[in-house]
Length: 480
Ligand code: GLU
Image (cartoon, rainbow, N blue to C red):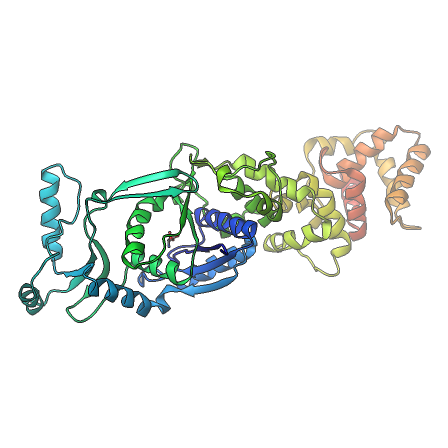
């Protein structure tokens, strides 16, 4: 048997971290088993589904590296298939048309509430006679199509994450609506649970891997598989992602869209690595791994039942590990859009010669790609503002002569390497008869306008390539 799994997002919002994590688990399992990963867009909700959300979901999945083997299939293009299945249920006497008005349903719920009963449909139209049906039709009522649920049933399955799960059919809320806005001769809009089951059968899905919030749907769907005479697939319900207070992570917790994580400067390999850890742990307890490594080791017996707390510190830590290990060229490609968005004047081709060493130098201190904007700010200006302590440093006795000595040495022949700059520092130190520490501290103050910052000599070399060292030394000397 070839394992076939699917991701079935509804394009009613951007790609959410929960859906993305479900994608990761599906993908890992498919790759582990040498199976297929299918993408199906569940866009039957015409009002809430938007093409831009579909676009966002597809782009986000690709960005994360969750490439799919088949699809995307769109449920909105498959409505006939669902209507055929509903017709089959009607023909078998397993479904029927119910003509209750919204007011009647409300009244029914009020009565149940008054008696302290859970809300449910009381199946009152299950056995309408053709005459009763004709009367309702004549009144102009529209029907829904309900699938009969046998309240005496106990539904059980062996969940790959949760073990044995049992549901009483009597807890499913009565006969279930599978299509809206129908009439005696038509089948209206097919609904979620029915469409999912028809598709999962038709697409030969062997394992349904999805969030724990779908457990009640699974109980209903198992009854539909049976009614349609199809084999029931395996189910794996993955734990919810929780916020710091232990509630389900939601929009109120701030960022939840994959596109937002991307904008915030997380890189895809770090984010998928982190999502894999939201509920799964590697047999060797490794925390940093590639998707391919995780796929090799993935199994459901290492997926937790308990919810997974979202931990920003850990995500930041993982992201920093990926950034620290990145080649300057790759890092530059990823950071360039942020630098450009910050309106720094950059010619991506001509400036590459100093941008590469710049991002290479900053890499070890980056947590998110966005950090590069602040940390590199001072390389984009001809002059800098002086902090008080830096100003005091350049005004110390003897420092002007040191800075003038350096400035003079920048002309002929112009130093172009780290070694040239080191030699210049040594020459001026000797010529002025001062301590090397004084030269270094004064150069830092003059070039950076501050007494702390990134590596002095590497920074100087970058500024040298732009001749910003000259303009800054002149500005520092003007303070004296
Ligand atoms: N369309 C459903 C959702 O977005 C998922 C359905 C499923 O995985 O069965 O939550």
